[in-house]
Amino acid sequence: MRNEYFFRVAGLLFSVTLPECWDVDTLLPSFRPFRCGAWTKEMRISRLIVTTQPFVDDGKRTELLSESTNDMGHVRLLRNIDGYRVEIDNGPVENSIVHVMVADSIFDSAMAYLRPEDPSVGAVLSSMIRILYAQAVIEHDGVSVHASCVSQNGRSFLFLGKSGTGKSTHARQWLEAFPDCHLLNDDNPVLRIEGGRVMAYGTPWSGKTPCYKNECYPVAGIARLQQAATNRFALLDGPDAFVALLPSCSSIRQDAHLQESLHNTLIRVAELVTIGRMDCLPDREAARKCALSIDN
Image (cartoon, rainbow, N blue to C red; front, side):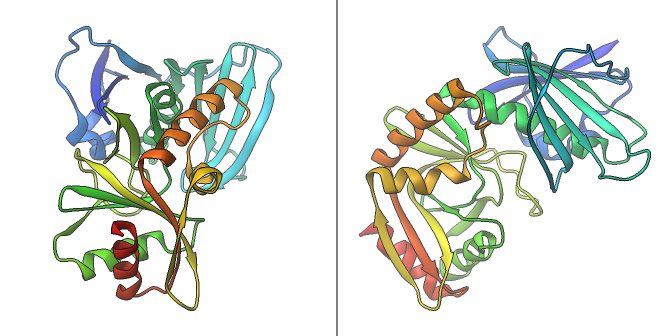
C-alpha cells in the first residue's frame, strides 16, 4: 500500500507517493505549509512515486551530464533515451548508500528508489523533489532561483550571487535596516510571471535557514551582489540584465527545450523588473543603498 500526498508551491500542484509506513511530516517537515488536501483532478506539474525496492539499471546507454558535491551530497545527473537519472550518495566512501531518481524527459513523472536505512533519507527525498520541481516549473512561466529573498511593504527583493558572496548576509542587513522587512526564503525562492507581474514565492527549500513560508509578493527588484570596498548600485537592462539572472537559475543546461523556455521567461523578467549589480560591503548602508537605488 502507498499513500499519495499533494503539495502546492508557487501556485503549482505536485504529488509525492510514499510507502504506507512512511510518515510524510517526519520525512518532509518543511513541506507542511505547502500541503494540500485530496486531489480534485486539477492538473499537477509532476508526480513522484517513492519505492524502497532496489534500483536495477536497464542497461541503456547513459550520458553523464554533471557531477558535483554540495549540500545534497555527491550528486550525479545522467541522461538516456527515455529521460534523466539522478544519483545521490554520501560521498566517495566504501559501501556508500546510493539513492536514485528516474524521471521522464519532461519531468512530469518520476520514480525514486530510496534506501530507508539512510538517516538522511528525508533530506535526500526533499532534494530530489527540488530537482524535479525546478525543471517542471520552467514550462509554467516559472524558475527556481538560487537567491535570498526578503519582503517589505507588500513587495519582494531578491539577492543573487555566487556561493560565498554574502546573499544571506545582505538579506540580514535589510532585516536590520528596515523594521518592516521580513525574510521570505534564504536559498531557493521561485519566480513566476502572472498577469504581467513577476511574483516571488516562498518554498520548502531554504538552505540552512529554516524559513518555509507559503507566501508570495510582486518583485520590486533583483540585485546581483559582488563584494567590494564601497557600496555602489549599477542598473542593468537588456542582455546585461539577462546575464545577471541566468547563472542563478536551476535548470539542466544540456536540455535545449528547457533552456529555450527558461530564456524566454528570463527575457520577460528582465523587462518587468528592476535589475542591477550591487557592489557592497556587509553593512546596513549597503541595504539602504540597494533599496534606494531600486526605487529610483
